[in-house]
Length: 109
View (cartoon, rainbow, N blue to C red):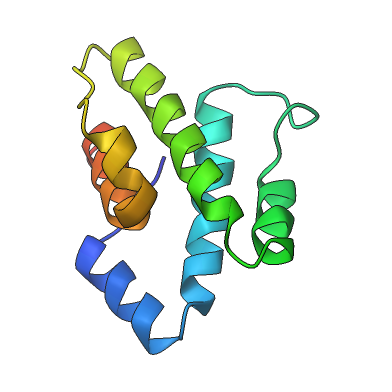
């Protein structure tokens, strides 16, 4: 998974009126699904993006929950303690919380 600056991601997301958020959404979906070793037939980053667009953003809530559960499993696999509040708070502050957690899991480069 790739480290990204939280401040920069939020700033660019606002400046591009959400276009960057779609790119971020796709990339994070792809990275987390790859890390979880989930088959593309079972779950796919492109399908997640299509669902997000078709549902006019409503799918965002389900995706946040799903990615949060995946991140909990990845944290446990890496010997880190999962934050109980990360999953419910990710429904509203998903980008910030997920990227924070990914940054903690990503290798230092």
